[in-house]
Length: 227
Image (tube, rainbow, N blue to C red; front, top):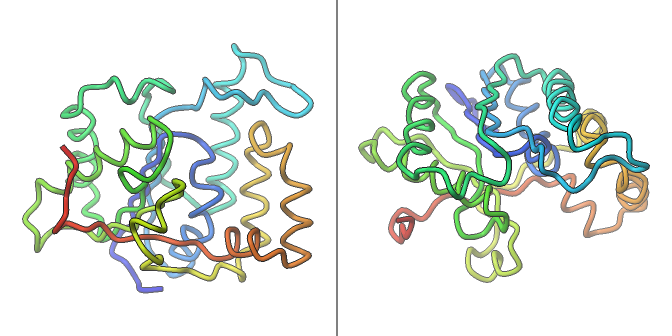
């Protein structure tokens, strides 16, 4: 993994980082790279209230905030930004204002790498709105000054359309800590942890590839279709 000047991670929900990029974030931190995590919402509209339920619709925002702070502590994140947007409403935010928010982070932090979702291949409307905002913000910069983009994709057709991942990070050496990050988001992950850990321990190829190999695509600026 190359040493970066600064890594900016932008996701809409607490736990978006846990599954696909937490190992990568920890490895960047271990290499001495500053990492900022900007989380746009508190995920307060999530369906899961714990298993068995321990949250209510009223208490879930603060529970998820505490879970995110715990996950950040485990990863070694010292710059966690809570951006204050409302869950499941990002698609209705003004596009330029969302892009402005991202651009202000870029201007402040001068990252050499941004990690987020790939527009068109991240399923959830909040994911897509975040992904588009990242592209719109980075597009404002001259090509020679743009940070690299390592983007997560997981729609049903992403492999067909995007091909094999451009970047794959083996995070086996931080797997035990990644488990703790996943467990920190217990309101959302508790129901699946036993099955997931058993599958990885049994070397189930699907789970092993998903959890121990964090995969990213670079953005195809030559076919930029974000409006």
